Image (cartoon, rainbow, N blue to C red; front, side):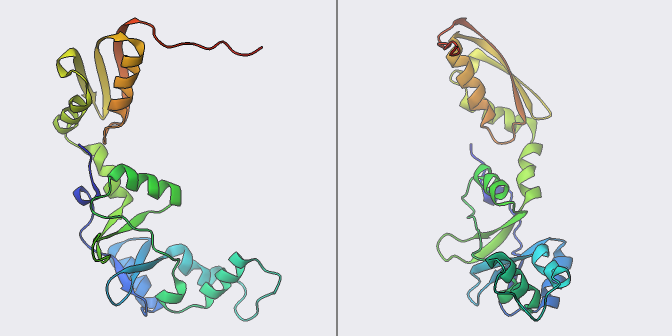
Length: 218
């Protein structure tokens, strides 16, 4: 069974309005102990995100008054953020969001690809923010009760009675016997896709080699 964002997300929507001041943004980050806050419009729809990196430009940017015409677009954007004083002018946009029904695996991949520590969760109908998904929430799938994890592992096996399953700290050892080597590989990959599995040790034996090994070109 696929674990969804709604199963692990935080129910507190960590957000500020577009007109929020620099000080209010810092206060929100401090209050919730987070490194970023979602910026929402008057209808509670995410429009962007302000991170600690955006705020640090206030101190790190050496140019406050003049901008060279030869500067890159990125540097000009950094100068503008360094001079900004509200969430609307500080934020990075658009906001990258997920819904309660998004698979945790997909959310984790999105966080990794975009280098995000948290994601606003929105209602798929209204687009309004309903919670926040943090990295620590995603990692909770690796601390699931062994019984729950074993049930999900057995659910993906082609014939539950033909395989043995042992779990130790998220590492799943699968034993049994199948006819072809390709079947043993398929079992291993199916178990690896189960949320909460840290690694798979395959002890499934096979009767017949059915994979063609192509010799290297000389």
